[in-house]
Length: 67
Image 1: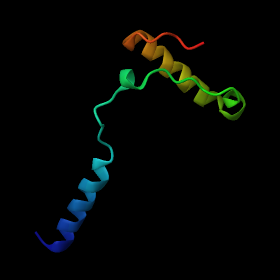
Image 2: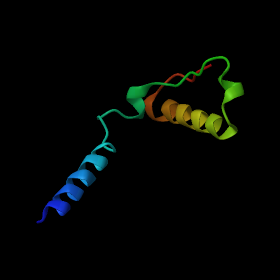
Image 3: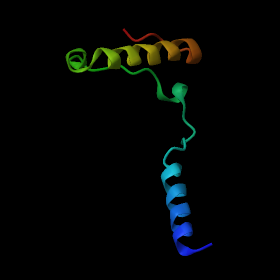
């Protein structure tokens, strides 16, 4: 294998290693409770994602629903 291929392969390994998980998942994070002004700054899509994430945590992890 020549030097260019080795460098490309090492670069690819380095980049993909950033995608690996540290072992935590949804349940280890806990519910996300935004600050008071978040409703004005966030887009509708961001709000929907937060609601979906917290609802999944309630169902899968047994979190209490954030108020």
